[in-house]
Image 1: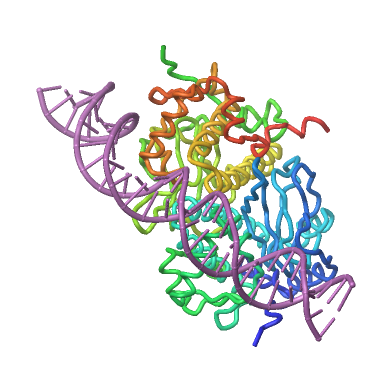
Image 2: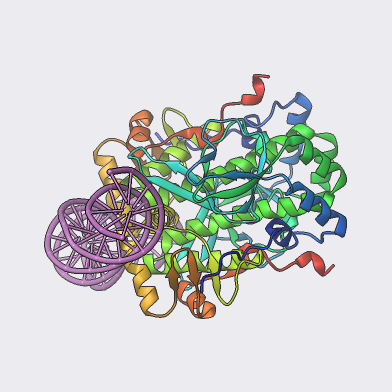
Length: 248
Length: 248
DNA sequence: CGCAAGATTGATAAAGATCAAGCCGGGTGG
DNA sequence: CCACCCGGCTTGATCTTTATCAATCTTGCG
């Protein structure tokens, strides 16, 4: 049986609730923000290099990424945006983009204008606080990707990425029985991890044979998450999911 | 002849002036902040993992880094802090550190308490704006490090790092005749770049023999910066040094 | 003088890239 | 309905890059 839809309708609310204690009004506001969506095909730039960024983006469904092209035509992916992820909260301070953001699959996104942000700042401080938290988690994730891509073997690198995605999907309610949906081709994995497509393929097969990973199309299953995490040296601290604000 | 001191006394002012138009009062305030310094030996943690961060740090002299230790005892360095760099502007929002910050050499640092930050927010909006700019540049630098460490050969990786450091040192007035001082051991370079010490050594020698780089102790000379940049695929856009705010 | 930190060298092994096919499934146009 | 085409996955053979191991060298300094 294939699971068609696993992401709840308000992934951003699930996610932000880890960053601040959101009231019923906050949630209502966040729901209303997500009322007007835009459908975008896969492989489309949401913002591209040199462009002057205007809106904050929110991914509600699908998969997008931050990337740069190298001199020789290869693509380097520096971040994945899964449902519930915001981006460019702040970027009005910088004059221009130094990278592009593109959809990898068909996506449902929300564009939030500067007016709305100012409204939030004035009237919904906890939402803003949660959005800052999300930004800081993104930064921590960048650091962990540096560690992963610089110092781990191909095998661990792949395993670590899947552990991260599993955990992130879980926070937006996208994991059922160790299974989640994410249309990651092996070519995309190669661009993320700085490995060749062929090598990614072989390492994934190895993980499959060891029973640590199961992939069928876009459906990814991690049968024994602790085992995979142990193998990869995965420590979720950097995702800051502890809701520390609740204790104080 | 060896150049002893090349960093001007207020590197943070030089740097922040790229992030916002600072008034004479802003500069005076920044100078007074840097009046009370702390001397720290090399190899000391300024903040370590799991600690609850309190103060914002500013490096006035020396070299520090963000790092994590891996399971197997290796060290992964995710960021270098050179004179003029702030860190943890924000981090009060997060409950705990997910990495450590340590000095690599003897450093002169400033610790800025929450009270001072609140004072700045109330009375020096341009300083705050510039500090946000610095934070966003740090984030952009993390992204470029992912690209560098994931997709470039050892040779280019090293060259690219030196191009970045040259450029960053230049913005704080630390470059004279293509020469700057930075006490980077080859072991530290290995931890930054995810390469073995031996391989770093050989590649640096290669760059030296090609006349692209000269290293004598802590003194680093880049005789032909455009040539090195060209070779490494270095594009300084991500450092956001254009002073866009000046045109508008 | 002798030590320690850092740089260098040579020999060998392993991880991963590259090249070149082949395969599989789903969509499409005749 | 079927041939074929294309994107994505798989395989095998071979080549490069980089790691590892084990010394040795250099230099500043107590």
